[in-house]
Length: 150
Image 1: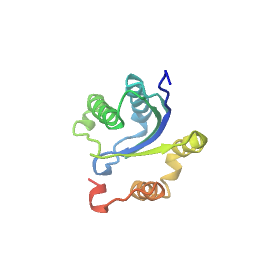
Image 2: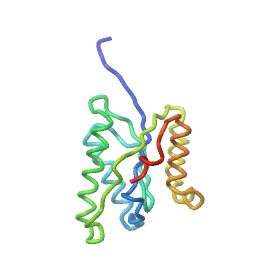
Image 3: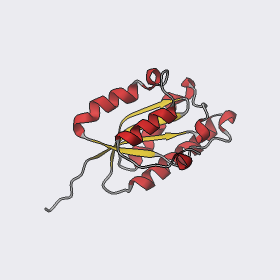
């Protein structure tokens, strides 16, 4: 084949350090746009970014030119630096060390979009930790509870 073609859809989830609820409604839209901009720079266009007070969900198409690990590193590093410039309340801001990245089939894009768009309602009933455990189990990812949280 003369051309390399790929479409790898990823649902990325990561939280604030210790799940600190510091992402107020006043910063979320701007943060979501900033995160989408970093993805654009890394040729990994966002389908949807959703945030709540202590974590982020991003549905995007991973570039065939960049490894997921590097993209996540740049997204977290860049957005953390940016947040620290927005307010003194973000001076000590950090994202958690790890992340969850789950593959999404094209046929499930709309259901994942809906899920991300409804995060506020969803988290009235379920904590981030319970949500993340559910994702790990649904995707058959083995984990040690001791090392999932920071």
